[in-house]
Length: 377
Image (cartoon, rainbow, N blue to C red; front, side, top):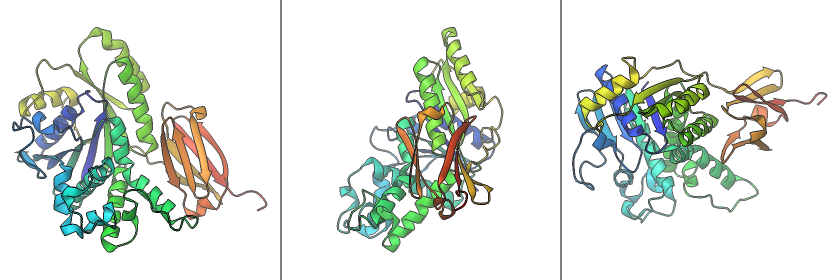
């Protein structure tokens, strides 16, 4: 199975450099590696040392770096044109059932459309099995959370559209992809497959890139919480651009806060990290000769467990969170967990949906929600 490493973090912290250096280090070990940019600002080509015009050059195709490494800056417009299939294919059905006569060039380039296209492209690379490793340069934290929540959000809108109390209601953008025509169903299946891989810690891990300052420490803690809420397995924190002794208290705070994770440190680079040689140097400082892919053992998956007869628990990893900071809501088979401004909607399996919620508590960094049949019922 192709491994996936997602790289995200605070804007300006050097996540693109970390993604490029990780991919290059993996390729040096003989792994067939592709690094994808899902960051629409597109700085990956520059980091790889590719010079060209600002708004031209290779679009929609991977570019070779060495015998084992390529990079691909995903161009959403090109992906739409490639996958539109004359207005009758899966993407046209995905956007809206009434767009048969609309060309790909006319489609509004919303964030939702861009996220779906990116996930479909990632799925294509996984299915092709031509790479051992896919490294994804994700957007900064907020946009990355929206990207990774695309498929669950679509499922939520589809459920609302299909609710008996709203027979004529049309779901929001993209909900049509989850039912209807064959092309739409095919897209749904592909998106669901990608989503399952992203939340499988044996396949996908996420690396958080940060810097040593007060704002970054807090933002990285929140990011770890939010990604964990959405079942993304974080395997390490990278502290980039260390240059001053004044940063040491922030480094110690990060190391203390993330004591359960591997924390890697990289000094400030005297020159730009552009091209293979500087990226090799950066990777050596980052990974110290260790395997850049398998840094730690995969996190044990949480989720739903059977505790006893007619008794189950839902376990979600929520680091840095107190029970008083968690809002829980249940409506039938749908259980909502909210921390700060981020929420996750969990659809309970039928066997649990019939049981009442019997309690919730924090145990270490895990939220444990219990569902149990009432006595005498």
